[in-house]
Length: 220
Image (tube, rainbow, N blue to C red):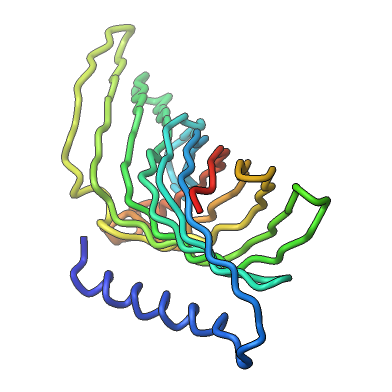
């Protein structure tokens, strides 16, 4: 985790929070907090030349909490989430008659900062549509690799997380429906950062792509 990345994120969060401080004392602000958790369907956008590669989605867990500051029609929500991302990759080289299958898991602490529009559906149902940056800090990495050559397979486990950058930025967007104190959150996170730390003409550009569904409860 970059020491400079955390202060920069905190400054941005504080700056966004000031947008929701009312200009008049009569403006009504509602502050809520809660917990949520669910499942990720994670993948990567992989730009690789010269080798045939198939990328498949990988399921994972996502869990954490949130703090929301809302006025009547708009608000801001800041979250802290533990998220399991990654992908399943299969590389094939027809000339060599070899395939390499990788099951890659990357764990992150995520800090989404989401502006949202609030739409009242009924007395007890509130709909939120949101968009904003999401800051990720890597906390774990594991890659299970199966190499098959001439019909013979060998499986190894790799925990060298130096193959992935320690932090990244996503664009998160989606919607949430509040049913009284309970909520359902569906979102998509579009990676903006190439998480491959290596550079060069043969190095792939790798960006996270994650669909998430979470269920939660407002504690306040």
